Image 1 (cartoon, helix red, strand yellow):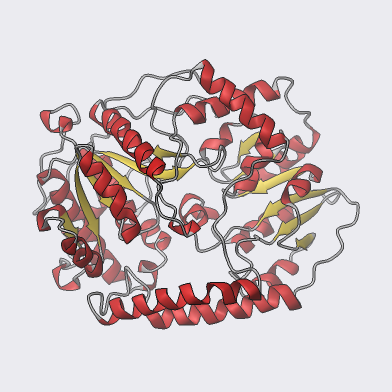
Image 2 (image 1 turned 90 degrees about the vertical axis):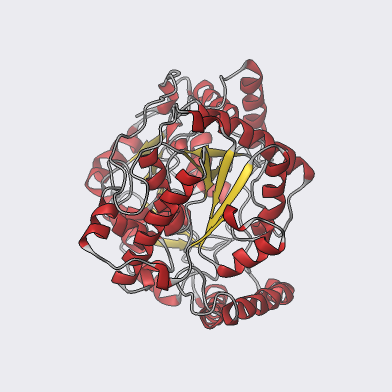
Length: 511
């Protein structure tokens, strides 16, 4: 669907009417129109870092009652030291409390599955830790989440839930909220315009919760942003990583502090918990592997000369990362996806595969050797200027990467394998099945850009601005704390989110 041609749709008050789980959890399904919906009770799912404490405290000052749900005993201890009442915390971390894996428990989990929602086994595979646990254990954990989170949300009259999409706890809570008629919002960085975020009603951010109508001021801001973007003054904020040995040394003190903290928690409150945190032994193995990978990419891997032949471009994803492992889950095997693209590309074109500049140390040598064995593939060094590559490419292909979004703003033909919000750009095309690729690639290579390209891009960006908020809800990956401006804007954002949840709004983004 071309989201750029959509018109405003009324907010939908009706929710999925699937049955509530049986067993010890309450059987009555919450109605979003009932008296409970007016209460300013907000649950934060999986917000375990101390960096989120100022955010929660600010919401409390704004009149919210904030509840916390997580699977780490160390997080509970920290919150209790801060004075958070025990009844505001749900900790699902003790395997002794997980129910037996009966057929009834399986059926209650199966009742959460529905059209457009991830299956239970997909949720297990999306969680980078739970997928390593025995299958029966993973299902027992999810059965505990289903039972305890449902009761906790209903007993505490939760109106809205704020979550990420990184863990099985967060993803299963989404399914519970859909079943119970509770607003669930997934924090989504818009990336462009920079330093903005929106809340999506799904783990795949195809659309955002509607916040307000698009105004002329939004259109003017969109034009100003697009002019700066074309002038190469703006680019997405990317998580930093150690791309050189100098950076490794510079970050060594911070990594030592994190390692000592992990050791303390692993030997203390979180002892034995391998499904919600990595033990120090795993972290040390990963650290050593990253240094091996860095040496290989910087000193061993060879990049062939690019030449003058026409090419299509795909940028590698940082992995593991929720954008590829959750949003683009069905194509999270990057080598397999690149093989599908290569077999679909005409012989007139090479396929350039650019190493992600913030994941230089993320993949082992075997990963690159597999890529080099795919016909037509040419690896591109991580520090090559991505904007110039996009401008010179005849086609950009991506799973969910920001390179596709940037290319769409530039009016380049793009194929994406996840139906995210920026597939609403006029030259971006969502591909839902690899067999469609050869025909789609052939059509896009031959198609001229739309005559009204810039106006449609401006309308799209104005919609993003209208339905997003001008701050970042987490700066820890930048090594920065919340600013006062962040906290002010977050307070406004969650006040508006509460209003949308209270009123039952769940409509599409309107570019």
